[in-house]
Image 1 (cartoon, helix red, strand yellow):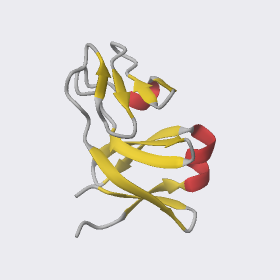
Image 2 (cartoon, rainbow, N blue to C red; image 1 turned 120 degrees about the vertical axis):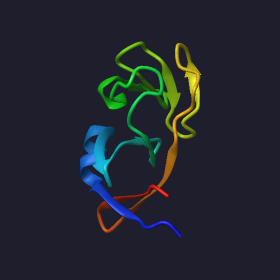
Image 3 (tube, rainbow, N blue to C red; image 1 turned 90 degrees about the vertical axis):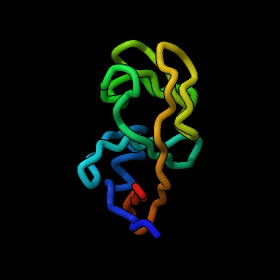
Image 4 (cartoon, one colour; image 1 turned 60 degrees about the vertical axis):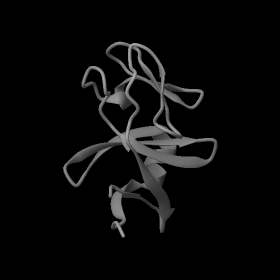
Length: 103
């Protein structure tokens, strides 16, 4: 079973709504939407942009480079020019921390 890894403080994510954090050498994008937490790869599949530098609205993150859209719940590419989905990760809150599983 994959290990749960510390990503950030729960209060930090609640305040920001979305964050990019390095975890085990990977950039992970964290989101809080409708009271739940989501985690996915933090770099766009199309243009290598950091996703959390774009807009986050209505459960989608919009890439700052070419405005491709991804669902934060599933990682699904929902609007071109992106067609490849993002890898998602298990995420949970525990003792005031946000933990992710990269496995």
